[in-house]
Length: 411
Ligand SMILES: Cc1cc2nc3c(=O)[nH]c(=O)nc-3n(C[C@H](O)[C@H](O)[C@H](O)COP(=O)(O)OP(=O)(O)OC[C@H]3O[C@@H](n4cnc5c(N)ncnc54)[C@H](O)[C@@H]3O)c2cc1C
Image (cartoon, rainbow, N blue to C red; front, side, top):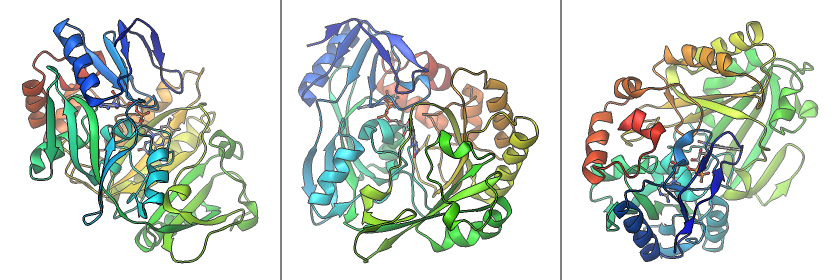
């Protein structure tokens, strides 16, 4: 049953919409019927996950769906270590269920409050030179089409899977996802602080010798507080508090669980997430890995010299290339570099200056984070963009799963 009208806003509050109808189906059949009814009445349809995207990707004036009633694991293929999950399941809930089943996700991002479909479909990633984004773990999906029919895809159709794994909800409403997982593992996390020069010197070794390596560059002492990062002074190789890197490595271990101020060993999904508060508007681009250090050095210079009041940290991580047609990592091993503007300030010139720097390297944006791409940029940056647009148009010729933002990029 669809409810009439309402207002929706995202987690950080920079995107909102007034919708004609809202729907919270409790089964795939109910979801399919809502989509069919809405499109047959000429309405567009978007589904929100947990609203953690900074871009207008989840907005619509038509039918706005949440799949919070579609949660949990529906099937475990123990032999192949594959799990089928209802699309509204949060990453946190999935992690707990996997732990009980002796399994783990291959990699995760910085938070676990996103709905699985919401996270995967924008290309959400963690860090690890040899580890793909979360969508690269998808081996099957079920998508509700505009007429309410179900499109089921699996790895026997690699092209369809690569089109759908990162598709920002444009190829249908995802009702179920099948993921490749692995045997349960514990992770050992280590934190410390060092100078920017030390970080750049150690960059290649740390990336090559640890399963996960990433850092936050903090221009001033207050930067750490913007992202609630712990005080690592006592394990620091520098006495400075400005122009420093908060470093993190994480590796698989057989050692028993432990926790101290700067080291922790625990089940995989208990190590990946950190705490954020909704006090930032983030831009993030995937930069070809060979340009990572240069890109970071140039953005740091920009911040120190031209935008000294922009003090949110640079977050710097690694992600391996994948086959997703519009994945930011399409056939390109990358580092990801993110910066944030402070809500309530005019940060657009700053973010545009960062965009100008990162563009030089052929970087591609995170679809859930602020960016400056237009349709021509998409065509230039994504070799399979034409194929994606053709498939989108074939599955949804009336553009019922588009909104203004996505129409401009992919319509
Ligand atoms: C504090 C914070 C930390 C973050 N950390 C990371 C990180 O470590 N790594 C990273 O890469 N990103 C990160 N992000 C970005 C975030 O992971 C993405 O924006 C993600 O898409 C948000 O997931 P969501 O469930 O909130 O989806 P939403 O933002 O609600 O939606 C995202 C997109 O998914 C679509 N969608 C949702 N459900 C469905 C469905 N069932 N079928 C079809 N389409 C659907 C929506 O329409 C929309 O287009 C972070 C964001 C925040 C705010």
